[in-house]
Figure 1 (cartoon, rainbow, N blue to C red):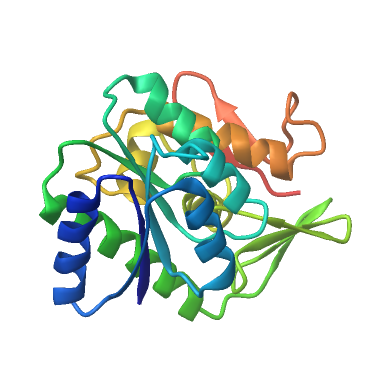
Figure 2: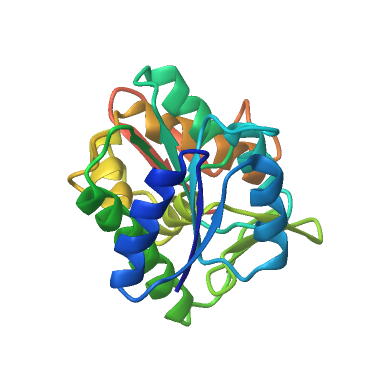
Length: 226
């Protein structure tokens, strides 16, 4: 597995690189946003660890630009603890976040959890799900809408995968957070709302009046089949 580590703190990058190489990963490094984008385009990267504050191009902009051409999982690193910074990172397409300073063991656990889910999904041979205006391909982890493939982030696909395969079952935000992000995920339930909103924007003909991903008021979310 190949990891791209992007941070302008060279000692931090060196430490993260050393720890992941000891685990058998191949590690690419970048110290600014421009270099990160170039490597993300030119190299076959399996997961990106991306700092929020970067020279030349900031981490949120890098994340957004990467989402224009890739659905590679992205973990954002931020020195800011405010919730809005974390939620903003998710809005731009990040799959997870970690606040500095962090324990390297926690970062390793996050990476392993994301890669395990990605590998399991990639190895499955589920048929595509066809809805009234879309087709969800479980093998390529994309949505086909009106002849156009729409890219999903790792967490977006994990979420829609769960809902589509359990139509009519209502999941609370806490349940979705536990199942999709992991029971030990330190984030709050607004993370779920952000991803549901992004999925509706990509999937629904009219996101303001959803027909597939519905809300059970006071309970949670569920998927409604045609």
